[in-house]
Image 1 (cartoon, rainbow, N blue to C red):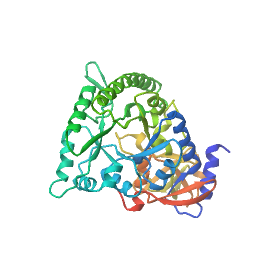
Image 2 (tube, rainbow, N blue to C red):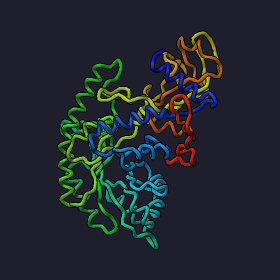
Image 3 (cartoon, rainbow, N blue to C red):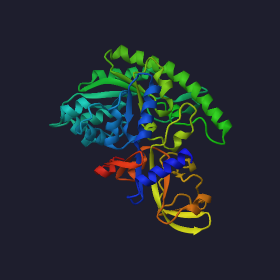
Image 4 (cartoon, rainbow, N blue to C red):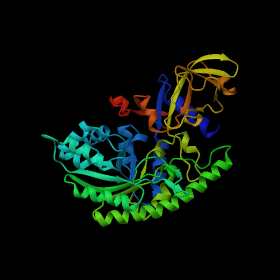
Length: 402
């Protein structure tokens, strides 16, 4: 029996009392992945990216382990909810236009001390101040400045990387730091620089050796350029804000590289806890799939084919086959190219289909990590061949922040 077949047998036994669709997290794999992230971080704390987890119980499990500290959130509403729930260090990774949320933040000393907001434009500060008008709050807002990490080639005519912050040079970031420092009610406490073109792009894509080689060359050049520029940015900002608390960088795919930079004080990672399918294509690390979902077999339309209920859960990003969940257990199943992953039914082809009966479970891996939790209101936590706990996702607690 292969390791994957053994896992399938365990998951089937553990969830025999549960009807599919159902989602699980294998805690042994989750903990092993957490340990691997800590090892790769080389002693620097890991801030957990909540968008990749979307489950308070599992955020707490990660943060209870040595080597993890703080949460990186994705909306202001989520940040405030987490802070009210007892999370004491929440870095909002994206600018917000949530005026009501800013009004709450500026009026509550507990929230203001726990939540740091992201800024890359003075206009974002205006939104915060607008929320203070009248009898609004007067709490000092903690601010993190975001650096654009994109690699610019040929005089800027070619850009590699996400379109995030407009702040690219040390001078630009330092100018914004000065603008914030001059403005009452705000305090610059950190810098964030997320190199998604390194951390979030696989460099070993199956059946694409030339593309993979090109990605590795690009990422090596991007790491060199960013390490030098990030250090210069930190020096420039510290000249304005000597008490800077943190410099955040990285992502699951670049933990060890980013951690090697002296200028970086903490690493962000989250997807590496669940290890979705997009993280199969890396040479720098190997994780264990921890989060899976099962769909029930409801039809047997012919030889070498079964149909499962639903399953059309595409991931965000540029549309393509790599954004679809992948049939994982039993091994050897594939989508019908005429139908793909369907809204209410998904045909699957391959010889393993002939051994599946009506009611059996087919296990899938999502393309991305936390987006799985937008489809399920609970995660069943598996230890060995038993479900030892069932915990709500954000959705299960009544929250769909985006």
